[in-house]
Each structure stands twice: as C-alpha cells, then as structure tokens.
Length: 254
Image 1 (cartoon, one colour):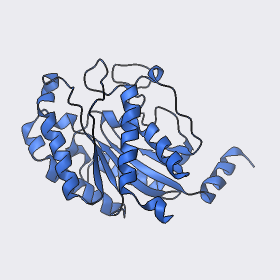
Image 2 (tube, one colour; image 1 turned 180 degrees about the vertical axis):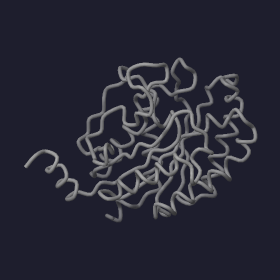
Image 3 (tube, helix red, strand yellow; image 1 turned 30 degrees about the horizontal axis):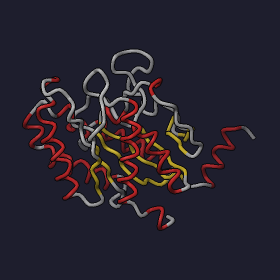
Image 4 (spheres, rainbow, N blue to C red; image 1 turned 90 degrees about the vertical axis):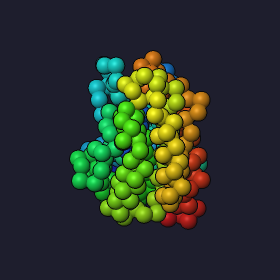
C-alpha cells in the first residue's frame, strides 16, 4: 500500500478540524522564513491539490515565494494551528484562500475570491469538519473614507452569506486588528486604521460567535505594512486564544 493510500485511510479514521483563511496579505503571510524556527507538528495539515498534506510554510502561497519585496512567507496560521492542535489533541487542517492587496469588495458574494473560498472549503469538507473562519483584511480599504465608513455593513453581508453557503452559521469567526504602526502617509491608509479597528469591534458586537484579536505590541517589517515573522507567530497564538474562548466544538466532542 503506497503512502498516498495510507494517508487517505488515516485521514478517514481520524477527524480533521479545518479552518478557512481569508483576507489579504497579512493573513496570507509575508514573514521572512529565516527569522523564526519552522513549526513541525504532524497533526497540522494544509489543503494542497484537494488533499491534506503536512503543514509547511508558505501555507498560503499567493505570490512568489523566494523573490520580490512582497513574497509569500511565514503566516499567522502556522502557530494558530499548532496551538489548537496541541490544546485539543486533534488534527487541524488549514484552507488557504487569502490574497494580498485585495479589498473587501473583492470578497463579496458572487466575486471570484468569495466563490473560490466557498469552492475550496466545500472540497475540504469532504474530509474534514469546518471549525472556524480566520479573517485579516482592511489595509486596502483604508485609503478611502467611504470604504471605511461602509465596511461594517459590507462585512456583515459577506460573512453572513459565507456562513450560510457553507452551512456554518455556528462556526466562529476570528478577526485580527490592523497594525496602528503603519505610517499614516503609507498609501494614505494609516490615518484611518484606528477607525477600521473600531469597525472590527463593532462587527464583533453584532455578529454571533465573533471575536477580535489585538495587534498591540506587534511589529512590522521594513516595508512598513506587513507583520514580521516573530509577530506573526504571536498573532497566531492570539487568534488561537480568541478561538478557544468562542468554540465548544472540542468540548462537545463533535
């Protein structure tokens, strides 16, 4: 029996709890590989070619990997998955669908990114149980006051539709704050970031099973907009803590 068949049998025998990764570059991850130790956990998987493969970074390769200023790299999902898997003695699977530089409007129902996330999640659901949705996005909307002002209503429309399309109304949603260290003049975004973070907290008050993760104390790369690898590791742990505060899936043994 070859390794692929063996892996397939193990995956059928042991449940995998999957998490959808959506948003833009700080969810996809732009951390430098050499700045942190790789996370190795045989119970952490990532979706590749429709199969669950052992987690390795980059988990969400939406850009070039070894070249370019904004290359795919370390992301917050690795430490998140590692923490959840260890805390609950379970297998965790990551569904990478984040895309750098995207605005919320590109994630609305009927748009390509939305449809791609739904498609990939439904594929993952053949061999896993959806346990959470992780979101980090907003920098690309911060250079336009109208987009910031309308963000809450647009996000609620999107996430309500996404939960419905995935049959996941009771699945927790975790949102990460944007960094307030971004230069206020950086593409005109930084000046509106406090308001965008306020939007996230307003969303969490209105949306059931939703929590916001603080970005306080996290540092950025020299590019001035992306979290560095050390901070991404910490951010993932904060996402995991927020998730554990919302989810009852493991306590119920579902």
